[in-house]
Length: 276
Image (cartoon, rainbow, N blue to C red; front, side, top):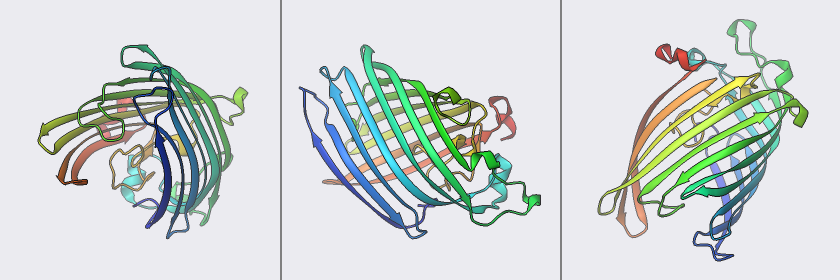
């Protein structure tokens, strides 16, 4: 992985049907270690209730990651100058979605992140890539709303259908956050069976932030499966879009191959994408 290096992830999954669900419930745990001494562990659960009309998901993770910080903005990423940082913390995410119309789900999001950033090599002032001191030991706690439209034939390996999602979260100081800000993430996935054993998957996504956004919650390339191959965080700013497509070829039994490509940009605001 261009962000964390080479390593091993061990994952245990229990997939089962409960409460008359037609989709599989998933209970799982995962642990990761890479050759740059990054490590993480997580527990997660996804459940379907009321004949799939109620979708509940939750995850908790602890991590110690060795990363590179390039600064903020497209120019900072392009010049390819960075400093080593270490991020230690915990994260909790919970979401509940109810089917408010056929195939349309809506509900609340709860998100909590506690993060300590250690700057391993202080940058020379002339580089202009310092992290604000108030963001080095930070808590982001917020509530939000999620909206999903889902016509996929399978959640784990779709061959046709659409999945669109909107997630808007607003950390606030009265909820325990150190900063007041908001971020909105939109994604649209489309799956097409174009030939026997061939699936075309298309994705468009956008990210936008407002307010006093800490550096770790800006829009990042390399996250959410957008524009794979980039170092996560090399390109970060207040707004981002990414468009990509991939051809999936199931050439033998359970074996397959994927060819993919994409394009995108980051900018300080939506009005500044022309120069991004």
